Image 1 (cartoon, helix red, strand yellow):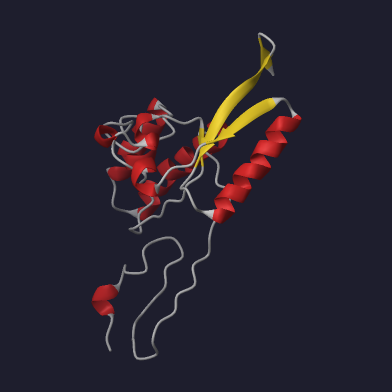
Image 2: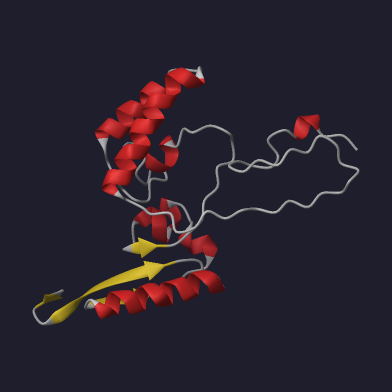
Length: 173
């Protein structure tokens, strides 16, 4: 992959100091070099990588080609409009992939219009299929969390997909 004799050159970013991600970047760099693509590693402190658009955030401003970062669902709802919605591109939202798919937006609005899970599910299936087809981002790893709690804590229920504080109102000591 060359232009005017020069290899295609792109960059990758993550949070500086994250050893496992830095090693991943190096492996990606080697794999891309094997097919003629130069990959520059540019890592940033978390407060700059994730800063808002107004504060010059690398992700929010789109100052990257590839990025490795983690995100968590903090509530048990499949709606991801703020990170995938076509109207949520920075500086308005956090759709850092900048994938603007109007069908996804329509399905998100339709899913949000219902409370019943059975009515919502078909829309979220369509959204997931579209993301699978277009690949604006790719999940490298799904990290399993290990929760350690004192045996005195009652009613703690770990959640695999959301914040472990989802049922904190039920906790008792």
